[in-house]
Image (cartoon, helix red, strand yellow):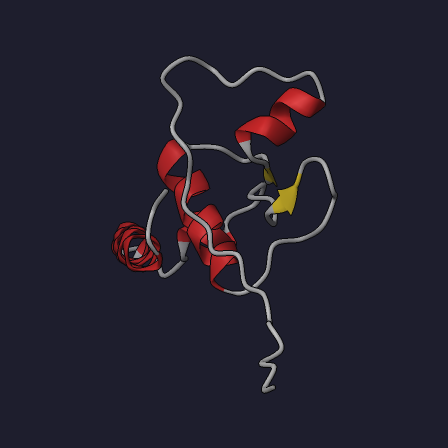
Length: 102
C-alpha cells in the first residue's frame, strides 16, 4: 500500500510532467477533449479533492480517456479482469473520526 507521501509525490510529478507537456500550446493536457472526470466504476461516485488530480494525471500518462476507476476487488465484483502487469494508482481515503474523551 502506498503511503500518503508517495501519492503526493507521484501526483505532483505527474502534474508537473503534464504541465510541461502542454506548456508550448498553452493548453493543459487535462483540459483536452475526451478526458473523462474520474468516477468509481462500481459506486458511480465522483472522486474528489487531490484524487481527481492523481487519477487524471495517471490517465494522461497512460493515454486513457475513460474516467472509470475501481479497486481490484471492485473490478472483479462486476466481472471485469485487470490485465496482467497492470499496476494500481495511488489514492487517498479520507474519513473523519470523532474524538471521544471519556
